[in-house]
Length: 196
Image (cartoon, rainbow, N blue to C red):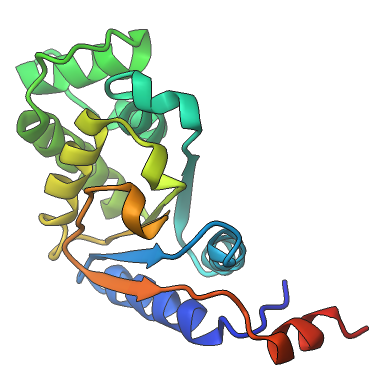
């Protein structure tokens, strides 16, 4: 995939992933208006990470999900529930039920879910470094946003990088990491992109 005017964004994501592979995890947010190219950057990064030894999980949030507690969080965690211990840890049991049966509840503690998710993701990252991508985060439900923010602040010593894309004014989510503004392309960049 050819990117125009987004080379710095891609290089920043690649550097964050390389740091994560060395056990220095983090979070990178792409923030910009609709149509600015956030999803294109994410797709180019996903392709790169998939060919550079990372296990990649992608969750693209849809507008209707903001009405359902935990929808975004459970979609992201679905590939990793096998790393939970529901018989020995009550929080793991709650997260497993949440992911497998969709038993969404506002009464579930986001902090405890973030810690259960961290245990699961950490176990998976011990096998292969993880890239977790969440596109259109501005549509995510409040419970998921809170748990994801808590999770993103606790991965600095993990082989995990979280990459999110969202519209600037549309979410209260603030990750612990790098925020990259994605501005619309200039006319010159658009001409370069359209050139055969």
